[in-house]
Length: 144
Image (cartoon, rainbow, N blue to C red; front, side, top):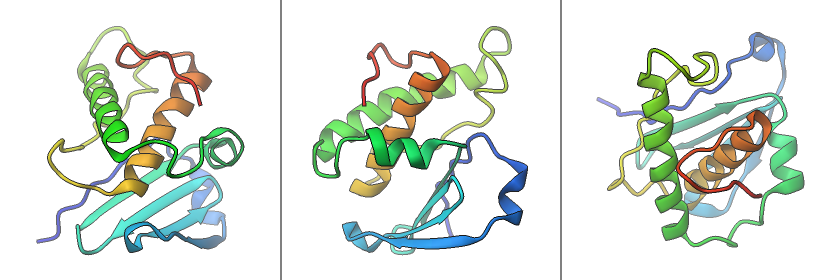
């Protein structure tokens, strides 16, 4: 049975009507496919998949994110773990936080090595999300 690591954020209806372009990466032989503002990374050897669907994220990533290699893998994993815990806490809260913002849990295991590319994109999504939605996850002030 294949285990999947899936993150689907802010699903948009127009995705089915858009064309697909592929972008290859050099990190850990990941396959990155881009559909409009959809970023998908898959690695069959680890059996995970991450999908980020959010209008504006890919253009924000290109314009604002630090280049790959700027952050260490340990830094990215540490921040992602903190952000995931807070994100999932907000998903589980019935009252309070905007339910449309925190719709789905993120299954991110702290002892699984997802590789640099997944951690880099997930970290940058959390930064983008916090800036665009004026949110603060995990006590860190977001900055690209």
